[in-house]
Amino acid sequence: MNIREAHEGDYPELRKLYLKSRHNTFVWDNIIEMTLEDFDKHTEDEFIIVAEEAGILMGFTSLYLPDNFIHNLFVHPDCSGKGVGSRLLQAADVKMNKPMLLKCVSKNHKALTFYERNGWKKVV
Image (cartoon, rainbow, N blue to C red):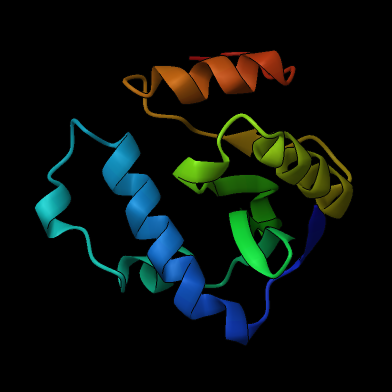
């Protein structure tokens, strides 16, 4: 698995990955209103790190560096359970090199469990 900074050529696939992951994860939300263009709005001014293998994007994280904030972390549903998310968290830690923050919807039990397994503590 290769972890690297995203480049403009990744964006078409990242948009698809983001939309598919949100459809699979945010079952409590109105998925009909979700669009490919949401990726661009939701990652504006953010540093994006991708995980890929054999040229296939497996996941990404977007970081808002001024606040040491992990804004998004999504793994393609077909790549779940393969360590992609953990590797992306490690890459975020290296990039920011200081304490980080993130938020997670309380209904997203799978993500909450993932973050706790990776050493994160619930604050609220």
